[in-house]
Each structure stands twice: as structure tokens, then as C-alpha cells.
Length: 358
Image 1 (cartoon, one colour):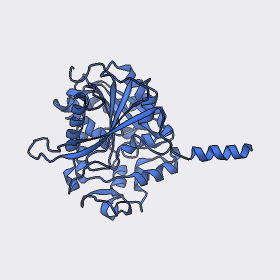
Image 2 (cartoon, rainbow, N blue to C red; image 1 turned 135 degrees about the vertical axis):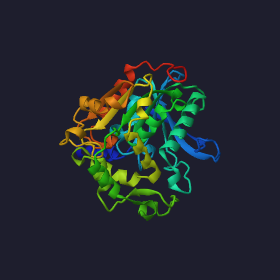
Image 3 (cartoon, rainbow, N blue to C red; image 1 turned 45 degrees about the horizontal axis):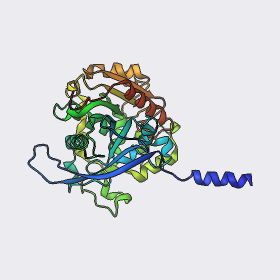
């Protein structure tokens, strides 16, 4: 009988059940993608506003607005495999005593959101303009009929680049209280970047997108290489089931998005005002930005990251390094450690009424 119960528990545990403590409201908003206002074409952006069950939401709620990286959609932040271990959305909401809600979304061009005919139209600046419109919606009461003004941008990789463009723009950043910047610092590891670049090919050639519309010039990672795994993971700290799931969930990308590399010259990031504090989070073994054998590229600890980045910002920066992790810090075995670090950092600051009123 005991063996039967053990088998039953293992069977139940094999399902990836969503947290009963978190509820999400899916909404589609219409955005334009031309900051000049000349092209007024509307595109749908699919969003998920998530909060803790039983919480009475107020306008003072802190909102973490999550922004995914290159070849990722909203599932990077709300990973469906073992969400207890890998969902930033679930962890942040469950462990914040209801003080934090999350707005997660599919970026323009990926997932369920609208796609242009040509992927080259998708750039970091377009993404930043979309994020600005999302923050406007949060401020205008579109979600839960509340005007949220305490918004923290939480980006990963390309998503961090987008967050930095937003935070350095004096129009866009009126809504920004803070930035959690993961998987992005100003000096890249050229070997890791070359390895990842070699893994890219036209998305139309990938079996995953065979029966889907993808812009003709869109890119993705080639499943016949190990480039994605090598660039994004330290396999000694990762579950192969996660890596396989990641391959199933991957999305398209555009060459235009790569232009966020202009941020490696820190002219824009030095324009982020001192009213917007930052937490920089890196995986200790991030192949795209780190090399523990090269002092200039070391990501060994928080002080190392601060020393690498301190001249690239005028605002207050703090850092956290996820031990042993590769680039995709959400998808490593110890992801919950950095989730807690993000929560602790958020709780340090009084973000009340810091948005449009700052």
C-alpha cells in the first residue's frame, strides 16, 4: 500500500500545476510601434496582470513589469515546468505578502502578441516605446481599475537593454521607480557572443515554426547545435528537463534587436536619474558576459560586478551574483535564491508614489 501511495504522489508531482496562491488576469492592449507618431498602425500586446489570491489591491501596490530576453516570451518569467522552482511571477507574489503584483507580457513580435511582416522592424527602441505604453496603461487604471504609479522594471538580457533605454529616456522614465537588471552588463565576452551568434538561423527553417506565421527575416536558435545551451546554461547547475522545455518554448528574434549593443557604450545608462535605483543580477558563469579566468570579465561576486559597472551609471547600483548559474538565471536550480534577492532589494526601498510624482 505504501508503494502505491508513493507512486501516486510521484505521478501527481509530475504535473506542472500553477500556484493556487496566484491569480492572473489576461488582457490585450493595442499599441503603436512608431514613437514619431507617423505610423499609427495598432498591434495587440498580450499581457498578464498577476497578484496574490485574497489580496485587496490598492494603487500603492508595487508592480514588477517583467521584460523577456532574446528568443523568449512571457514564459521566461512564468516558466511552466516546476513553477515552484522556476517561476519568478509565482515566487515574487507568494513571498511578498501581497505587496507586489506582476505585469508580464509577450513582447512585440513574440508569443501571442502582434508581429510585423518584417522582423527587422522590431528594435530595442520599439520595445521601449511599447513598455512606455504599458506603463501608461498601469497608471491610467486599465488594470483592476487602479492607477498604479510604483513600477519597477525587471528585465533579462535584451529585456534589460529595453529597461535601460526606458529608464534613460526623460519622457518614458516618469513612470519608473527602479530597475532590476539581469543578464546584462557593459562588457561582453566575445567568445560567448560568437558561439551564440553561430547558433542563429532563419526561424522559417526551424521545425517548431513550420505551421506558424513568422516574419521572413526572423531568427531563432538552431536545435541542431548546442549554441543555445552553451550560451544560456551552466549545465552543472541546470535540469536537462528545463533545457528541453526551453527549446520547446523558444521564440523568434530579430537582427534589429541586436542593436541594443549600443548600450555597451554607457552614454545612455549614465542618463538614468539618481531617483531610479538599480539592482544588477548576473549568473556567476554567464557565458555571454563572464569569464572567471579573465579578471576583466569576472562575475565572481557582487563587488566584482559593482566595480565593473560603477563608472557606467550615476544612479545607485547594487549587485547580486547567482552562484554557478549561467546566463538564464531564472532557469537554473538555484533560481529561487535570486528571486529572494530581488524581493529583498524591492523591500529596501520605499517606492510609494515614486512614479509620476517623482
